[in-house]
Length: 100
Image (tube, rainbow, N blue to C red; front, side):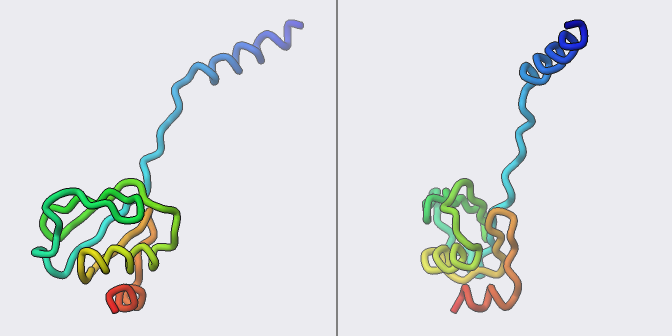
C-alpha cells in the first residue's frame, strides 16, 4: 500500500498540471498584387484570412492538402507568390499550378 501512495500522488500532480498548448502551424500567403487584398477578414473554406498589405494570415480552415487550399484562395484573392497551409509551404512548381 505504501508503494501505491506515491504513485497516486504523482498521477494527481500530472492531472492537476495545466496542459501546454501548442501553437498552430503557420497559414499565410503573400499576394502578388496588394490591391487585391481584402479590406475585411475573408472566410475561404473555413479559414479566416486577414491581410496587411500583401501578406495575409489565416486561422482555422478545412482539412485539405495545401495545393488545393492555395487554388481556392488564389481564385478569390488573386495570384500568390508564397503560400503555407498549416505549416506546409508550397514549392515554386506547386505555386505555378496554384496560380494557373
